[in-house]
Amino acid sequence: MTHDEPDPQPTPAIDAEAVLTQLSAYRSHDAPTHGGSVLSYVYDSGLAELDELAARAAHLALPVNGLDPTTFPSVALMEADLITFGRTILHGPDAVGSVTSGGTESCLLAVKAARDRWVSAGAGGARAGGAGAGDAGRPRIVLASSAHAAFHKAAHYLGLELDIVPVDPATGVPAAADLISSLGSDTALVVVSAPSYPHGVMDPVAEVAGAAAERGIPCHVDACIGGLVLPFWADAGGQAPAPWDFAVPGVSSISADLHKFGYAPKGASLLLFAGRELDLARYFALTNWPGYPVVNPTVLGSRSATSLAAAWAVTTALGPDGYVDLTRRIVTATGEVSRCVEGIEGLRTLGDPAGPLVAVVADEDVPTERRVHPHLWAAACAQRGFVLQGQPALHQSDGTLLPRSTHLTITPATAAILPALTTALREAADEVRGASVQLPADLPVPDPAALAASARESGDLDLTQVLALIETLPRETSAGLLGQFLAAFTAPRPAP
Ligand SMILES: *Cc1c(COP(=O)(O)O)cnc(C)c1O
Image 1 (cartoon, helix red, strand yellow):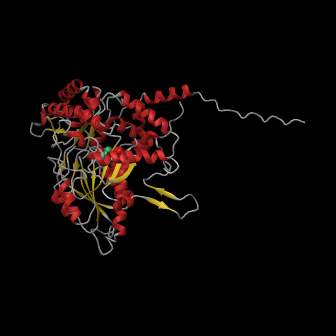
Image 2: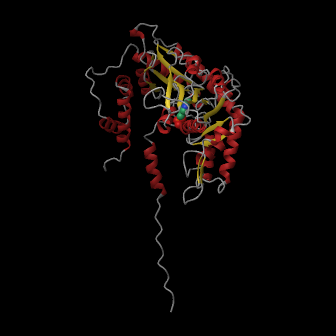
Image 3: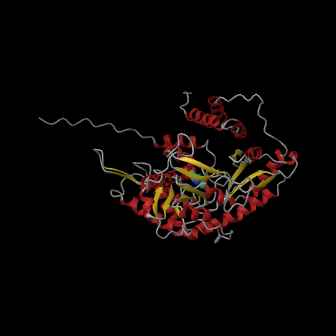
């Protein structure tokens, strides 16, 4: 008798080409990720070989699970190299920390560490009553109105209250005295930006960090966008920013995104702490369950090592000198873009940007009919192939109005197409000068599902109207609509 041969198991038929063709078709709907015509979201070094390197490094790390660096020591080695790089350029010889998935996660963990330190120090325990009903005993974050939304999100997720300090609408900068006078025994963390995302201007880091240190309060510098470009700004011929990194006494943590001006693909940010105490407070560890011992330095459990590897490869290949070279292109281009805007009747730049971010507002010094509405301008620029980012006006707690603006982030790739960009900026302004955005007086609250359906259909969305609605509706209403809109936009589509 012979054994029956087992039936061969079927092998899945994989038609890679067909799958990739479909993905390419999906990708063809996207805004261009290279070439510098999208002035937010993407940070293009303009170096094709750097992108190729990142892709190859990511591929090498593709099967790795970053959950356990003892099983996959490459994760620990790459991370240690990146922390070394970060502490060098940020002047924190003893700084420690982690590579996270992005700026939001870095900010979230900085808040988590400060909150847990505040709780374990019993800082709020002695405090009876509180600033308001319902939030008594909750730790608080002091920050400017221009601080990134990630801190609102962190407070929302982690149960903290926000003390939001207005910025000067003319400069985008909060007064150090206002931030400092908000510090109290219930302040778990004060946040300053270097620079702020909306206007690209520096918060008064040294004053605030020093005052916070005197009170035993940690000070986080949010350099998510500035952290990999400001360190090279002066060497690249730009004006040196006011001191803002670990060289400043009192700075206890810094976030710096590798996937912005680090030129790494998305999914990588640095979070550094000046010392071990706060650093350890960001961890989550658990031995009280029947599974494997858990120790997570960041939010995720199992995590990809692809973006870590890509970021490691890009920073290793560029080194500080490579960053200086790329920053040189940005310094020149940012100056040219600012001068171009200043030369356009009806527009001006807001404040004194310290790096590669420019906020453009209507020039109130010219008559209404000669002003340029920054969101109509952005729409007219989009018609010419340049994607700028509209930012709505904001009423601040002191009654002042931060003007609506349009945001430009200048990258090395943008530097390479400056003549086309500046021509578009000028022509777009000529096209819309004097025009205003009209919303119907009996404003019906829009149906987000209908908006999403038409945006899917036509491939574009009237962002000018969306921003006008955000300025008009109560903020809670518009925030709710945004959620419904995105849910509808990303929902499964009916079969064709
Ligand atoms: C981009 C940014 C963040 C958030 O980072 P993500 O990577 O988008 O999560 C936080 N702060 C500042 C100043 C930023 O520019």
